[in-house]
Image 1 (cartoon, rainbow, N blue to C red):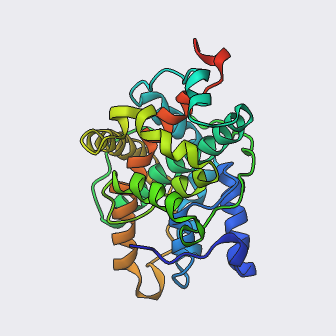
Image 2 (cartoon, rainbow, N blue to C red):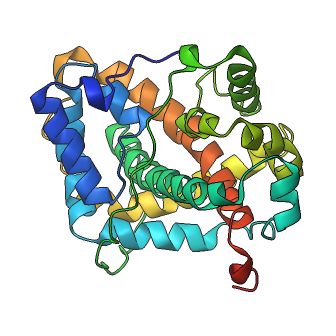
Length: 275
């Protein structure tokens, strides 16, 4: 399944302004797929931005994001330099790839918590009595990534690597944007199954996803009182929004959060090995 999306370069001024606001508030220099998809539904992205804006801007989301990341299972040890070279990757590629993974890690944590909160609020689920975390200052903006490739623009062998990694997640054919972005470095895509081992196996990924969902639901309920949805979902899109939020917060994003956590550690520079 290929979800329709409105990419940043194609956004009209009103949507571009919302994209810019999302990036400023989250400290993430790109707009994630879920928001690019919501932008294709008239009125839905402005509605969603109004709903999630308060915890994004008051510092409680930033604190919840750090708390959830700290609760994830310990990632693998950093990758030895020899393995990097053996994969055919230039030493200079490590820093930009690490920066890209950091962008997706922050974006996925942000969206997993906030959109889980929105999903549960729209479903009318009881709120657990969880105190919100003390707000913290938002972190600085991360470095801007290279352009996001389109799947149909990739060489067939690279597209096959992207699709093969996506298929491991079993997410109804949704291709996570991180894998598309990593297509700038095809040897990395080819090396990931060996580097991540069981952490990228279809047998283990569901358990890691469930852990991320459980942690996100706890974090989300603490932030739900701060949401401010402005009335009903516009344009008769309530059912579609509920289905998309379910797909992204129960399958796509929680499947990528543990992977990004592990990949960030693999890519840590040698002097971070004992951190």
